Image (cartoon, rainbow, N blue to C red; front, side):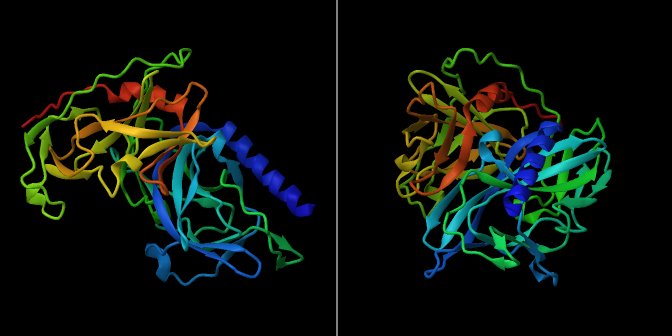
Length: 385
């Protein structure tokens, strides 16, 4: 009873805290982590061992966390785990940046996906937010729960009388552990930041824009008009195509350019005939390759929590059966758009699968993605020399 009370209090604290915070940067997916997954034959207890990151050499005492702060993924619009292999599991890592009083809080979410989760690394003295315009550094002050700074963390699902009690009930996939890193409050004029020292969430200094503004969209109508996207121009057809020979891949240019947005930004248009899912991409080089093929490209699909399956129909302007090049300029942002079978009106949350096992974009919220449509308007390239 005591443990249940403590868990309830921590969950209530997390829910109330988020409700009282000002969102600086809405939730974003920082990537997928493949971790080791073990099941004990005797008592069926499950264990997830997170992969080593840069801080694996650190000699520290393990922080045993018996009552992790929990939030429900439905309240945030993400948080899904998918078993990919018998001995591994793929976790969706997500973050959100908020202001709480005179401090800025980085929420680092990880799905609670086993009875024991070990080798988690949250933050250290290297953890900081840098204002990319002024160079101001906001160093991490502390973490929540306390004592997570500079230590490897092991989450124990249950403890009774200072000993581990086997829990035969598997954790629910909609439970997220809400780790928090607290910083001094960012300046109100901050527009672009880089977050360092959170490697398990793939935050190693990549720049993040926080000053874009969305145009309010009327969502009273559950359906949208079909979007109009600029179709890429085929510059060079494949030459005796061989997936192992990049010289034979087709080349495309003049793609649908958009204004710079954060990585893993998506938008959705739900029509009665199809569902359009746009994904923002950034060119890091003048020529970059993409691949929608895989072993079976048509295994890409959307799925809802009731088991609904909506298959990929096409990718606008690009092939789905071969690797291809995109020509442009380093620093270009562009959109590719996948067209799926239509989502029913009553589906509010769905996941995107690249095959029949791995959820690449888990637990996406239809309303939130429809609000992003304005971010994908065509934006011609401007070059100043």
